[in-house]
Length: 461
Image 1 (cartoon, rainbow, N blue to C red):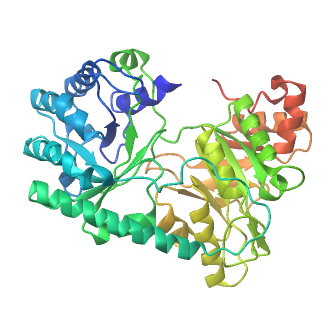
Image 2 (cartoon, rainbow, N blue to C red):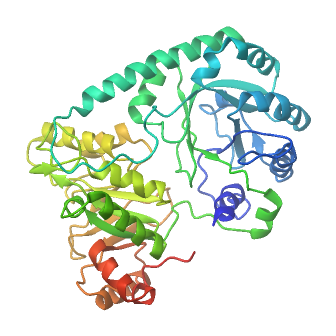
C-alpha cells in the first residue's frame, strides 16, 4: 500500500494519464548520512532525482506556476529541512541542474544562529527559499469528544489564529527578503496547516502561490496552488518503477461507514464509541467515513448559528484521518430557510471538520453560497449533491474531477440486515457505483459474524 501511493504519484505520466493539470509536487524532509529513522539518505535523493530526469520530468520554480502551460511532466521539488538540504541536497541540485524550493519555518527564520545556513542556501542558483507555515500548537492529536453543549464562538477563535499567523508569516517574509534580496512569491503549508482563511492571509502578504503538503494521496489543485506529497523515507524509486502502478486520481473505489454524530453520544463513553468506529474501519479496510453532523435544530459541532449539542464531528473526523481514512464525507444540514444562518452553520462546520467531500442538498447548485462557504474554508474539498431521483435519500453524485472523466455516484445502503446490505452493495458495485457505505451499527453486526458477511464492503489490503 505504501509503495502504491508514491509509485502512483511518480508514474502517473508514464502510464498515460492525461488528468495532470498541474505540476507534480514532491517534498522531502531530513536528509542524513548515515541513515537515521525517518530520514532520506543522499543516495536515495540522487536516485529519486536521477529517475525524474531520466524519464523526462522538468523541475520548475514556484515563480513559474502562474505562467504558461508547464507540461504534463513538470515537477516542483521541495525540501523541508534547510540544514540537511544545504549539506546534502544542494550539490545534487547542482549536479542534475534542477531547481528546488527549500522551506524555512518560523523558528528557523527567527534564529540568528541559523543565518549562515540561509545565506548559503540563498547563494545557490538552484534554491528558492519560501516560508513554511506550521500547524497550530496543540492541534496535534484528536481532541476529546464533548457531548454536552457549551458556549462557543468559532469565528472569534479563528480570528485569533489568523492574527497570530499574520504576524508570524510577516516576520518570515521580511527575514527571507533580507536574506535573498527578493520577496518570496508563495507559502508552503505543513500537513494540516492549510486552510482557505490562512491562504487569504498569505495572499495579503504577497504570497500568491500556495503549496499545501499532504502525507497521503494529495488532491488535484489548479495552479498557482500545487499539492505537495511528503515522500516517506521508505520510498525507493526503482522498486516503484517495477511496480507499474496506475494512479487513479480519485482513489476509487470508496467504501465507507456512516455515523450519525448523535450515535457517538447515544450512551456510555463517547470516546469508546469513536474507538468502535475506528475498529470497524480498520477491520474492513475502509477508506472512507460519512458523518451526519446534525442540523439547524441542533448541531454536533461548535457554531453560533444553531443550538450546540456538543463538539463531536471534528474530533471524530480527526481520529479517523489519524487512523488512515482517506475520505471524510460530511452531509450539510438541510437549509432552514434563513440563508445567512445556513451559510454561518456551514462555514462553522467546515472549520470544525477537516472534510474531503461535502454532500450538499439536492436543490443546491455549484454556484450556491453553501458550496462557496465550504470551499472558502477547505479549498481542497470536493462537492457532491444529494440525488433528487429514486436512488434513495442517502444517494449522492459528484461532478467529474477533470473534464472528460466520468461522474461518480455514491450512497449508503438502505438495507436493514447484514445479508441484504452486502447483496445491495454488490449489486451497486456491478452497476458502477463508486462510493458505497453502510451504517456503523450494521457494520458492527456483520463483523460479529465474520468478515465474509460484509465481503462487498471490505477493500483489498
